[in-house]
Image (cartoon, rainbow, N blue to C red; front, side, top):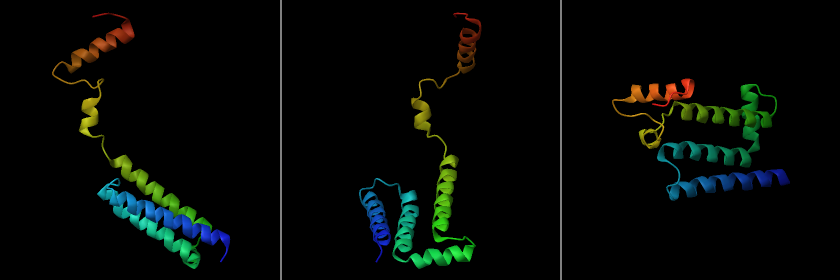
Length: 123
């Protein structure tokens, strides 16, 4: 067995172990645990059976298996980025921000801040 294959299997098993350990310690949110478990198992499968990457690369029309793996990694990163960009800022974070105007006199405070910044008027 080639050295690169042994290294890829070891790295894949470490990734799987880290994901499982984070799930066990509840450091990984439940809504992300399934996705990361699938990604980790996929990495192990591609490391143990490199012919699977070659087959999938041929099936999708990608020239080399390494390019297919990079494409797959890019798709996973794009999906994670898309998911995180659809998540709103928690209300607790907004409430904790001292610069967030609250209360009925919001317009007055904003106007006072504008007057101080633009005109130099102290209210």
